[in-house]
Image (tube, rainbow, N blue to C red; front, side, top):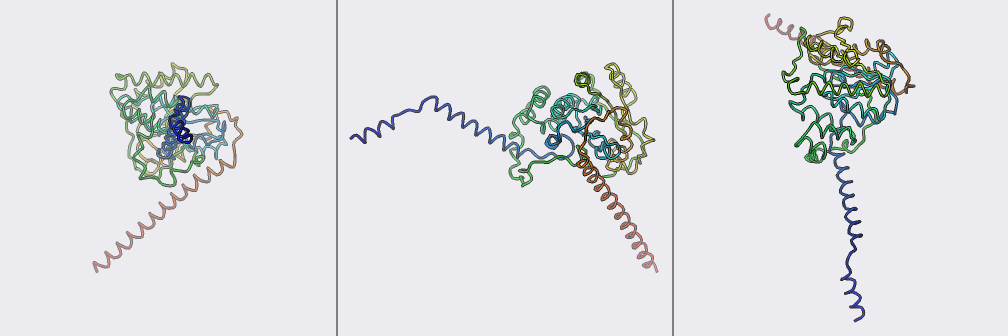
Length: 372
């Protein structure tokens, strides 16, 4: 009877509220840890085409003299390895695809957590993006790969909504369907970027003449241009507070801003105390070949990017004062990596041309013999 009484007493014993709370917290922590880990694995690795935050954060702290920010015209046209090879100045491209100026502002804020550049170059196409026409298109790829700080959360909450916002706040919502596509690479962490933010493009788009870049008629009506300008002002103010020189620039391209828009942007920036540098004004000096050096009418391919970066390198000291003691071995490896790829590209083109010429000669010979 005593044993039965003891068992009955244990069965009737209730769990204390404190123990229940601790158990619930442990369960929530475990669930949260699982969600964070799963989101990290399911979110695609970003190794090119901008927004390469994981690799950027593997860069040694305070190791660059200049940062290039902005849209794809930054990460397709600027080759930091070439800049270093020609000038000894370490730089990095922390840009994003079709990046509107508000996103550029938050990219800069986040970049300054780990880097202290003396100069920031802003590729200013973002001033002409009407992101209000399709916020998801402009902000989703730029914010998805950012670290989980206020610099991701503020623009996500300010400029997106619906499924886009849900996916940015809860990546499992956006990428839960990737389970079947996972590979071992998804479980590996990325190292530092051998191209320092540059995206290598091989394809050639022969171009015949200059064209005019289209700008949405609602850019001003929607208020997007005014907000873009306000974020440009924030960039200038932030850099001023940090003692950073700000340079707004336009990359050399065949598709160009209409003259009145270029003048408008240059005037608005001048009112903020900064100059707009348009490298199209020096186009003839760059030795760019419109038949071989462009990926499309806006972006340079690897041949054009190498030429532009090699030309730009000695000009950098106009805006950049070298202060960083760079890891020369790292940058030599990066230069070797880029020039190795470029050599492979050029050699494969030569082989293709030779094979094509030989094939045509054989075909012509067979055709002539057939006529006999």
